[in-house]
Image (cartoon, rainbow, N blue to C red; front, side, top):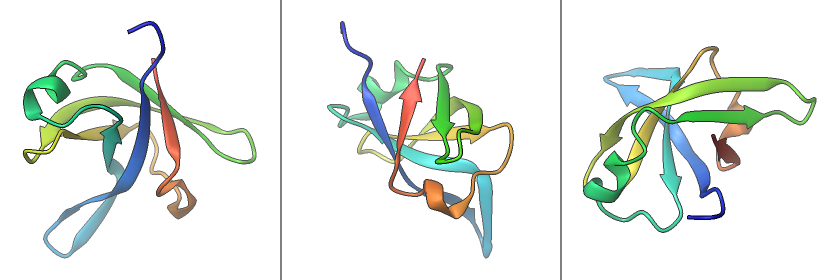
Length: 89
């Protein structure tokens, strides 16, 4: 992989009735199985807001059987982050 893969934030992670805005579900283009997704566990991710703020996080685990990953950020993400892209480092 010469280029960095592109990832999209799908939604916040939900446990019961609560939304956890620090934990987000992300989908990396070209990753469609848990085996491929597991290669990205431990990688750092960065989301940049329109105002230039950086939110740093890390991929912590896979989610489901379609290659979706859970990323945990240091600070909670705002709602405007949904369906935007994150950078994988």
